[in-house]
Length: 342
Image 1 (tube, rainbow, N blue to C red):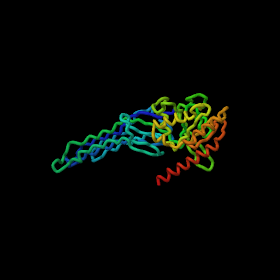
Image 2 (cartoon, rainbow, N blue to C red; image 1 turned 120 degrees about the vertical axis):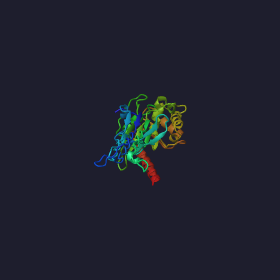
Image 3 (spheres, one colour; image 1 turned 45 degrees about the vertical axis):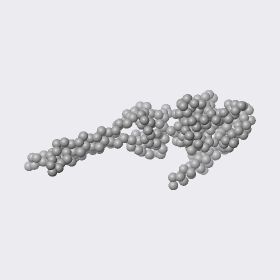
Image 4 (cartoon, rainbow, N blue to C red; image 1 turned 60 degrees about the vertical axis):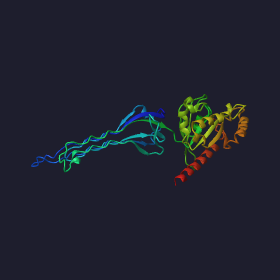
């Protein structure tokens, strides 16, 4: 299934049913009183998250959604049946906005979370509601209220414990394929990864955690260069970041350049994103001459961030130690989140 993380749709709640104008017509009661029933309420439009969806792909094919209208009232004081609510399923991590204004209506995080975005119109009152001592036979009833029509923009932000960031061709896809069961496309050229990929990392005696392989960032990503803004939002909800650096491309002069380039894009895109904790991973130590580069870069990075690991995603060197370290960090972050909700 194609990964789609944006969609624009139109939703319409149901119109309310009309109230009824009716009078009793019983034997021996030629001029009975009013008995027109009320119209039913229109159905609401609700969004609900489901773990069975991981993309907004289905909204490529259906873009208009309408809830059922309320039934009209009838004689003998019979009220119309309310219209059925329309439930639209979306994946967790979806942000729902007004398309025109960008105003956020709801951010869906948890599985099974639901929220009404458009309320159905109220049903009109039947003529029996308007009977009074002055007007015993009202010949009018209310029309039902119209439903709401909204143009909405859906944006999906992947939910992962660890978001992997770095320049193109740093080895992110290879790392995800070695740490998890995910099988992203892997090749030795930039921009192999064109869509975000989630992988589940399983370790004995601890809970599994989710990592997200985000397509490589380039200078100007915060402005959308290389689809940067679409990719950056997928790491906003990560508990922390894994910053992967390709040792084989580190310049001898100014070795911190790749590190600063990526962090500058994070800072310009989102201040909270820039504040996320990072684990720095120096990759491709299997290539000739990179061990000396790793030592030099480690010395330069330690004053900025001492959480540094040297690996080869290709050969597996250092991966087991890195995996265990990430698992400990995730467990610690989950514990902090749990305690904050108590």
